[in-house]
Image (cartoon, rainbow, N blue to C red):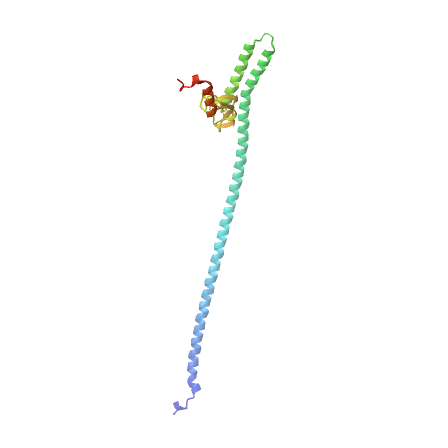
Amino acid sequence: MEQDCLSPATEKEPKKKEIKLALEERWAKEAEQGEEESVATTQQVEESVVELRRKAEERDEYLDHLRRLKAEFENYRKRVERDKAEWSTLALEGFMTQLLDVVDNLNRARIVAGETNTTVDAYKEGVEMVFGRLLEILRQRGLEQIPTVGEQFNPHLHEAILQEERDDVAPNTILEEITPGYCLKGRVLRAPRVKVAVARPACEEKTIQEQNPGNNPSTP
């Protein structure tokens, strides 16, 4: 009879307590998980900060290294330019020293030319010696004269300013050197000006043969 007298509210009280306990357990677990996640996030942030600091230090080291390399290269470039200028000056001094011998010989030739007892042949011989010495000095420095007469015309080496119709030599053969040309260590310094042979027109050759039948091999 006593059980029958229990009210529904009294029966629901244990269930409420169970639900409350279950909720509290769940909230406790969620709180623990939240704390763990918060701790993990804090650790990740700290690790990220440490990594960023390390990378910043590496960046500063690289920048400092690049600055030192730039300064060293700039010093090297200046040193090379200074050495190059010194080498050019030394080379020019050596060349000028050799030319002074030619200048001295030319001065002697002038003195000899002023003497009344100097013959033309003696003066000519002295000038040829001075000229030969000058060419020798220039050859030692890499200067070479470009061959012309008898050679085939080469537009990369020669400059044709005159032409002459010839049938006794091959076309484009150089007949005469107007102005000598030179190359310095394989590079054209000044192209020689030359006269070049060109083929005689066919109609003109026929006219010449008709005027001189004795020179025509086909004439009996």
